Amino acid sequence: MSNTVRVLVLGDVVGQSGCRAIFAHLQGLKKSKKANVIIVNGENASDGRGITPELCDMFFSNGVNAITSGNHIWQQTSIHSYLDNSMYLLRPENYPLGVPGKGSCIVEIDNVKIGIVNLEGRVFMSSIRCPFLIGKEICQRLRKQTKVLIVDFHAEWPEEKEALGLYLDGSISALVGTHTHVQTADERILPGGTGYITDIGMTGPSESIIGMRKDIVIRKNLTQMPLKMEVEDSPADIMGVLLEIDIDTGKTLSIERIFEKSKV
Ligand SMILES: [Fe+2]
Ligand SMILES: [Fe+2]
Image 1 (tube, helix red, strand yellow):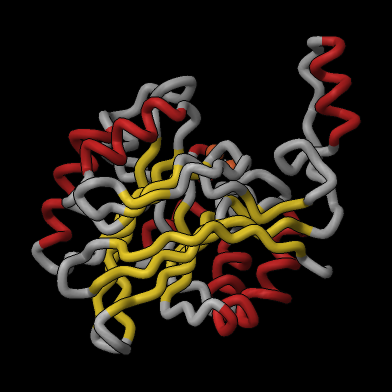
Image 2 (cartoon, rainbow, N blue to C red; image 1 turned 45 degrees about the vertical axis):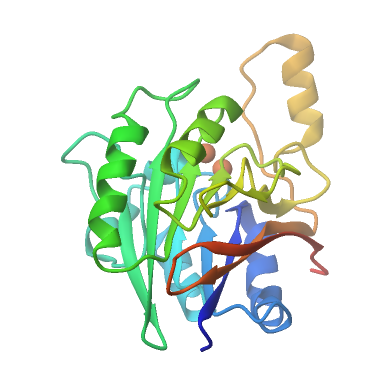
């Protein structure tokens, strides 16, 4: 590995459509983008609701180095003990103390350590612990082991995401937003060298509304009835970013938005 590391981060994998895309295209994407490390947010992999141990194992065996998540991670109860035992499946760090799992890990590839932190926002979401204070604390701790630090900030509100990006600017390599399933076009490098994007989008069905069946979502909006969402099953859009990071300084040198059509 040269003095840079290339990190591919893919947004929320939604249902069978998203999983098929990961299994069919991840290795090709890794090769074409010359990625050394792959991080995938898996919070919607199991039919839109959480992720199972079996799917985690399949992600890892298909080349995913770490799985991040968010508010949906708790929905498959079989994942709770897996969260406690897996090194590389994360839930947001700032949940209340005592919940299963952890919110950070260090992946080591070719003697390069890549720290990964998962945080969740609080605007229009659950009132969990402060992502700013917890985020700063955990990043400071991990920075003693490596300057290459990637934060997946799973949050709804752009203001909160930009604020955390700028709050941590210079102390982390990149902050990538997830959760909305809609990719934003504001990828940039902040003044202190931190790569930033408000939301990397999803890896999920293209003919959908944020991964869900559009007929149901439209009807829900028309009627205001609490209709049960169902995951769409068309071929996926694969959305994310590719980061090139200087290993010595931890700064991001380039951030490229990824948006590709799955063929399956
Ligand atoms: Fe999601
Ligand atoms: Fe989410």
